[in-house]
Amino acid sequence: MITLGIETSCDETALCLLETRNSNPNDVLFTEYRILGNIVNSQINLHREFGGVFPMLAKREHIKNLPILYTKLLENSSISENNIDQIAVTNGPGLEPALWTGIVFAKELSQRLGIKILPVNHMEGHIVSTLIDEVEISKDFRELRKIQLPAIALLISGGHTEIVKVNNLGKYEILGNTVDDAVGEAFDKVARMLNLPYPGGPEISKYAEKARNENLENKIKLPRPMIHSKDLKLSFSGLKTAVLYTLKSFIDGGGIINENLIKEISREFENSVTEVLVSKVTRAINENETNTLIIGGGVIANKYMRKAFQDLSENKSIPLLLPPHSLTGDNANMIALVGVLNTKNSLEGHVEARGNLSLND
Ligand code: KG4
Ligand code: ZN
Image 1 (cartoon, rainbow, N blue to C red):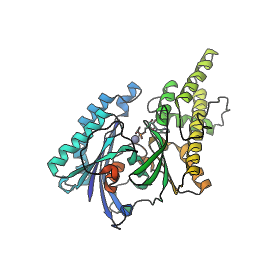
Image 2 (tube, rainbow, N blue to C red):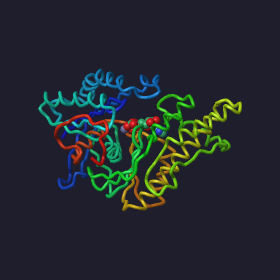
Image 3 (spheres, helix red, strand yellow):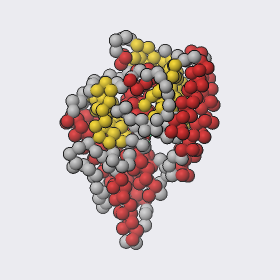
Image 4 (cartoon, rainbow, N blue to C red):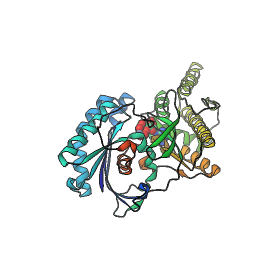
């Protein structure tokens, strides 16, 4: 079975060809896979001057790039399009104009080739991205990583921050959510305050690491929002404002934003976010039967956070699934895999863009 995956929910145009076979017809998790082709075209450089993703620009770029990348994908993988069995496409959540470009492209292709099209929830993609452990194009089939259910998943990206109970594939319960900004969004906004380029996550983490390596004195203290609230709600907008006030009082006191200040703030910000996330996930684990811990989404590219969750997993003796570094950000492999696993969220039917699609739907 060959699945074409298409992802256009934000600022990455991503396509892949995923070949799968099943070694146990009674259990879809016994899927074996090999990646025949994989392309991620990032628009980051174009959006950088806007300090974030500009939806209409994203739409224009996706429309321009999809046919070019599709041809390249077929060429690179030496697959004839007639061998594609099905198409999995992200239909939400995300920027609706951007989502539609992938869906329209998928619909035209599905009509021309006479194959089915499966809508995929992008956040479910981030969950299953942790089942893939190899993104290199290879001849050999590999097994999916094993997952013991129920699992607790923390999803942290530029648009979302949610703690999800995974009862089964396609059967999710959102236990907690951010009440304001997403974690990635907070990284991006704080980076902007520090005059660092978009996307801010990798920048902040780079400066935070320098502060730790150089053992810089810890003079800045930021809050740990909602860390003591007895629920799984999260909030990052106050933390962002606290950074703003810290900077303001520093400048008012005659200081300048120099590299050491950027390092210190970056480290304290990363510490705060990590402590809050680890604390909330610990609460979720304590309150729910958890046989696997899953962390997905662009922010888990963060090395410091990966280590913090590895420590938590060891302390709690709960196996941890993290995506390989190349699948932390948006990609089409995770979308194709959701289609293959054929969960409730990816059944054939009417496909339309749903910007606010939720895992609870
Ligand atoms: O999942 P993703 O690629 O796109 C969305 O679905 O939103 O996540 C993008 C987010 C951005 O906010 C980016 O700043 C953040 O992930 N990010 C990071 C790191 N790398 C990317 N945040 C913290 N540390 C990183 N190393
Ligand atoms: Zn994403």
